Image (cartoon, rainbow over all chains, first blue to last red):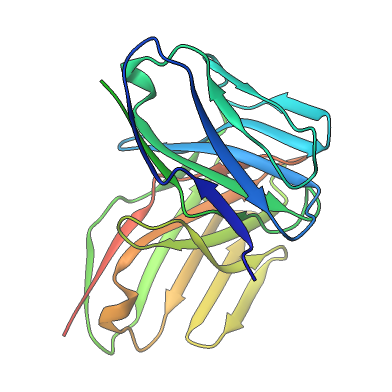
Length: 112
Length: 110
């Protein structure tokens, strides 16, 4: 029972590089979410997806791109990483928009 | 901006005592409310959710919702050192979005 997984778990990159964070869930949940968590800000929604090929912006989408070609995968791409994108990134999923969101283990990203 | 406010703590309680964690929210249209627990370096995990006014109990945990006063609370009875964590309050308004508070740090001392 893998649930929801994220890879890599830790990543160090340099400013200007492209980075892709992966999220995979085995529950066939329709909804998937990307959050970032920073000290002093709590969890903030970056993007979400209601189904394959349906995505929408959250509170802090600038500098990020998402895609969802398959229900189980929801990758997050930082097209040109900046130091301000150093954070812990959590993927979450839920069966419907009204149900509980379950979180993956997180990816710790450091942008130098 | 729709706000979810929590006291950052740390809230320190002795083992065996009741820990009371509070959360207020600004949007009267909020529909459902969640409490997550997050250990240091780990991801948030759901403790409870509540949709209706009143109390909801699950083991040692009780969630309380008062929509008129716009607050939701979490009581932890017989607190254990393993309950030491950060507790996140999340509020869902219309649609999909969860708004999270910044969390309250709880320390249960032996």
